[in-house]
Length: 202
Image (cartoon, rainbow, N blue to C red; front, top):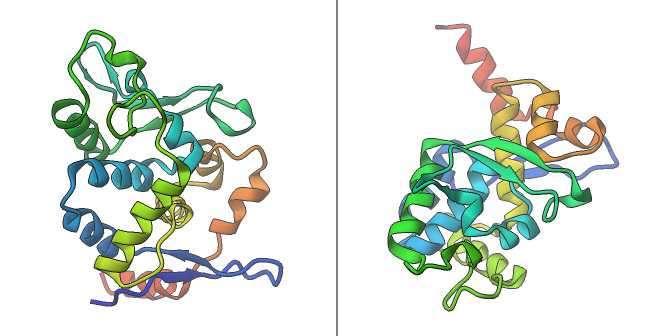
């Protein structure tokens, strides 16, 4: 298996190629992580495209409502960049990650709604951005032999979406104020081109 991240060329000299994971790399990464809390953290980043500072500030009540995991994540204005709230429909994999957090990680106390969703014990302070970066880097190096960053997981989310839908929807899901920010994902890489040609044989 090729463990090197794909470079997603923007076609512009002003931008460096985006480094993203293939679907296979991402699944291998998630399947390999042994610590449930870390697995949930990386799954949520990969399947929601949250910025690391947004992930850091999520509360349990953002992920769990009326005794079940949310199906749509409402990113509150208070934690969203530029204070622009947005809604992100969740994948089955992300919903399973939230269920794991609820069943195995979060304390079952009367004030659980006051806890940060991804915080380590005792849950009252948000996880640090440096800790998130270290977790992502550790598993990227261990299982994919690559330098993995939280922003690469966001790039991966956006690139996967761009194959399925249009730039306006991706813009909304990423929380970009301008479509220009989203258009870096509209340029195909070599793998996208190869897959397009292969589809002609089907």
